[in-house]
Amino acid sequence: MASHIKCPNCGLYNTNQDYCTNCNTLLSYKKRRELTFAQDEKERRERERIQKEASPSFYEKHKDHRFLIVRVFVKVIHSIWMGFIAIGMFIAWLITAIAA
Image 1 (spheres, rainbow, N blue to C red):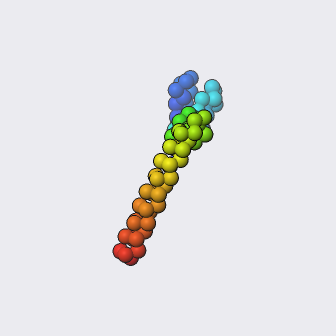
Image 2: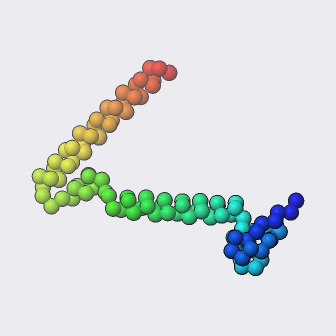
């Protein structure tokens, strides 16, 4: 079945075409969505990259601090946090093992 699409730019009717034969404007809604989705995905990745560069973690920001007391404090807090996470993971594993 033939598809007649009116070009929004020049007003010419095109039959089974993705682009206008007169002004080369994109007519296909499917291709428009694909291009928009690809552009949005590219922008999202760029935003994530910028955010990752712009906001390092507390540990990354202070682990090489010029003052020894700050470096020691950050490493102690980081060690306590890792221990807390390890205990939590063990408890989750234990509950899962008992339930299974």
